[in-house]
Length: 486
Ligand code: SF4
Image (tube, rainbow, N blue to C red):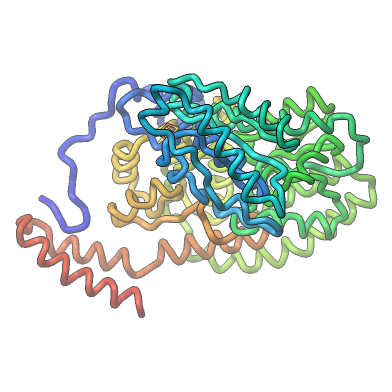
């Protein structure tokens, strides 16, 4: 039996080595899962490579030049990869490549890299660069170009910061790329490690997607919290080098930034706390937590007053969506544990059921939190692949999948609503405004008439032969286009 939109696979056999990374949550939340390890070869993991992990962390630095030392494909794959917005420079939205070819693989690519740096300097004499990152990709790891030496020579020659990012794609997984990016940021900040401390925060792990950092900065401004530097949403060279003067680091995307926070604690004596600005509860708790860490009674009172006003207004708007989403089933597959945990809380708050929670780079402590928050029977997946996601989405009867660009086609292929919570998104989902946007998007996606129409088509065309199916598909596609225009 088959249908136009849902072709049933014949078998769903999980690759044996993957079984230890898949678990069903129990009533007592005692679950064990293998995580924080390299992907099983041949499983077509949803994870990105080391280089990509480094690039997504550093890319939002608005006035940085990103030279990708490698074949053109690596640069193209990550060109303008984030929906990060900028209040000043737009340089970060370019992608520069040394375009490594066969000849360079044989004779070495260092000369090409030197020429690429020189070209950027030469072409920007009017507005000279302050910061260049040079990324090592897979092939550079294989041929062994000494990018550190090239960057050091360039710094001496041009008097600007040229920082290597040691990120050959194959040398680990996306998480190792985060670490490589954090090491490069530490290299950048060392020049200003002796700055005098001020009463202000560095905001780590927000990438200003769709302007989310601006929303949160508005809250800080109203409460009276000073932001020294941001990592790396809407960041620029001049602000980043001030970061060692902050008195507190707040860490949102824990997966990518906890390592940096620990390094900054060790080398600049800046303590850190973990926060989240996703969902009403987390946003309110985080604002209070920050105020208590850096402020006096007056600041805490201002934070409490601000939260009281905005929370009440937001809750009123959310009531409408809670009624429409009650008991609907959500599947989550996102990059890190921090985001998965925030999403579970948001879905719980909307009265929805969680049926799948998975991450690409979650750690053991993230999964422990996930077991506690998720319902009994929820499928928990680490470093999953499309095949497993399809299996569990069907088995659990999920109504919506929350994920990123790689999960979107899977959801639509299965006739399932989808919410983009990845770094390409174009609408803010953080803060109080983001909580309403999130509920609205989930509602509009789950309750769209398209899904019942697809089910109707499915039942009408069940059993139709393959060669006739294409004709039906064209007719129904036209109907769908008309429906979407209504
Ligand atoms: S670094 Fe390697 S894995 Fe990453 S995009 Fe380039 S070739 Fe692909």
